[in-house]
Amino acid sequence: MVEKSVVVAVEPGLQADKAAKFVREANRFAAEIYLEKKGRRINAKSIMGVLSLAIASGDTITLFSDGSDGEEAIDALVACVTETN
Image (cartoon, rainbow, N blue to C red; front, side, top):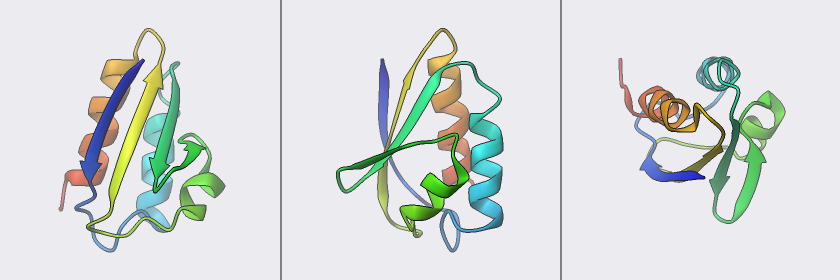
């Protein structure tokens, strides 16, 4: 299992279009991927789960993945939440 904590830099956070982009990216991978904020863990491939965490810019989240492409998945998802353009 791969685990990485990251501070969300995208504005205004993972809401609406940014959350949809994040979930689309997560679904490209075969690995099981989870996202955790303040002890609450959800399936990162679920738009409702991601939106339910109300992740704002500046929040710290932890990504977990388990599978053959788990490392690649984490790297891609970290890029989704840290790229500010």
